[in-house]
Image (tube, rainbow, N blue to C red; front, top):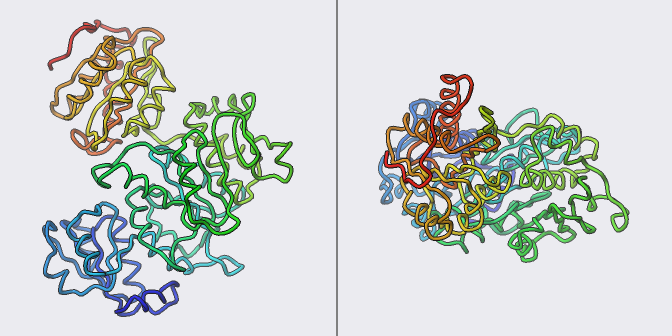
Length: 516
């Protein structure tokens, strides 16, 4: 198979029969890839270290083959398969032996996003065009902004759906027989690394795109902060209408300035300040659009107000920034301001995203377990300055010193969890020695949060906030950030169910490091 033939495979209706495709990884995304290719008539070999029983049963039914085993080297079965294309699940890092082998062998290397772009015309709109794509990435806020954007588009009368890293494979949406006007695609830096390998006329070209913010994350996957940044920047490649960027984050501005976009694409800025022409921002507590109206030099369109957002629990500064970004994306598809207001009226954040799980004894308990990196935790701490901060987990190669120096210094106390506590405790000792620090030594998962809540309850007083914003991944002690958040909420509710008045039954020693 030559790359010349691959260059012809830019439509669902092209001749995919006989194409030899190795699919790396078998999760919900990997299965969507295998299922799509089998439907197209390709010869599919799934290669994975392990597969769920359901997938083992389904793969032969759809006509795909499965190989399982260790992937620390390239298995003979994969090499002998002589794949024309390797399509990798996002978990496969650039330095993985199989990825390195594919690149060295000159085999085309795609992700599921690239395949979806090529077959996006399976179901088209009445005018014969496939759905528009809106791409969303950023170190933090991706899922919230993706949901917000899709909600606004639907309120504006468009058939739209959030897909990608948010959980629903994009290929499932592409193959949905009902069809869509727009796909709102959340992209991780892993997916964007694969996206960046594609060039030429068949490369993804979105209607609009945004990188919400940039801070160090996933450095163990990418190898360096520069490589992580470069991957994120691919979100703007070949954007046709609107490159939305964060005016408060210079890195996103530079990404847009350096991007190779389609002629006519506009740069649209957002932040919490007064907007200039071609920006969205905030004026006297009113969110306004000065980008998508004719008289943007002297006029602005009202979208909503901070007071209205507060009533829906959406007034935290970083959430307001996400709302502005989503509004810019929705306005690029001509969603009217009234529809944006309507969408926001009933919108609620995902669980484990600055979610108030209890108010007891005058103390507010907040679950932001989804703050899995320092940048996200910084936003939470900015929304709740002076909180009793629960922090720790797997740091993913990221230094927390700047977070502690910038935001942790204002915490009332810190309760440190997880396997990588030493770096966090050292950061407090160096940058915030006045903040009391308590360690919870790893124990059975079922006991961790009960001890955390016991400690925090002894520290917090009437009017305080206890904030779970770990700034780290959860997999050292929990199955996911959601599991971590659920266990925190359950521990809070269990404690105050036993003491219905919510009064504290003791106070922590503010000078001690807890040894338990």
